[in-house]
Length: 208
Length: 191
Image 1: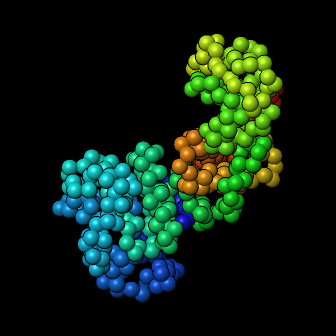
Image 2: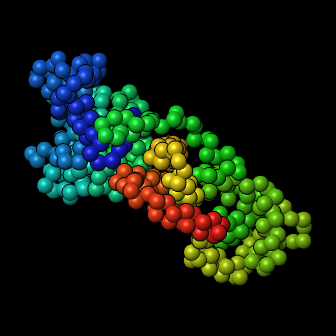
Image 3: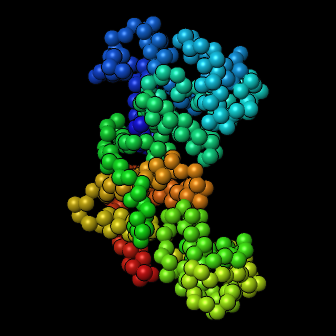
């Protein structure tokens, strides 16, 4: 999991849109799962987006005609996952975001925050190998935001890669690597992570 | 962390042995603040001296002695919970002084300095986040959250300093530097 930080206008969201095959790069090469995006036709791109890339964007609304859990299972079933197994996956993802009792509701029966969480729960399920998250916890409270990050982390532990764009250090701190961009270029990246035990050594006061 | 008040809080639940107090203190603070046996027993001695706890029997102080809270101890604990924490200068003051000094020094890239501190702070935040990821102990989660909010406010300050400096015009640098030095001097006097 990699976090990309930087001030507004530094190119963070553009980077994500290009990685997600939503926008074309004006130069260079973009590889997703070893495949160069530039060489793909529109069908192949659509398949790549549906099957392998999960998007956690604030403005992605769930589909109105499907219940919360169907919103999550639909792409799985399109890819041939059996109904029961897909449903189990969907319910687990909803539970992670505190929506277990909202599974059978339609989007117009949910609050704004709940709709946003359904849209988020939808992203990391199935065989998605690349998660792209743009300020994924935007309007959510701290506790629910942490649920989103745990969901993304658990997808990463199962082998997915995630790129998180944020200006919030508390979100970036969930990543394995943190990269800062400024004026379109990478300016620096954080050092490798020491183990958490270094915080617990007797007599040390963290932050000094 | 006041060991004194933590021990009073544990005794609110009922009488406890010295050893038990030490073990429960460690368990409930997520073992983030390990303390040695001596600290527990000397604190209990002082609490007894001040009339805030009572001890059973006349035996030696230590793990086998049974302690109970007194009504004075109850009142002391209630007062302490409502008292605002100490108004010590927060750790980022030192960072502010470093940046102000750096602005005066020739040849220092202040924005690179801000970035170095930002990196350092985020590395610490990642460590606390890892701790949180594997933890289900509420005390430990609360401690980690408190550190993360504190560190995040440092990153916010670094971000805003960065934004200010990028809009800063060199023509105004002399009076700004003088004002900065005055502030540094005042800050040093305070310490």
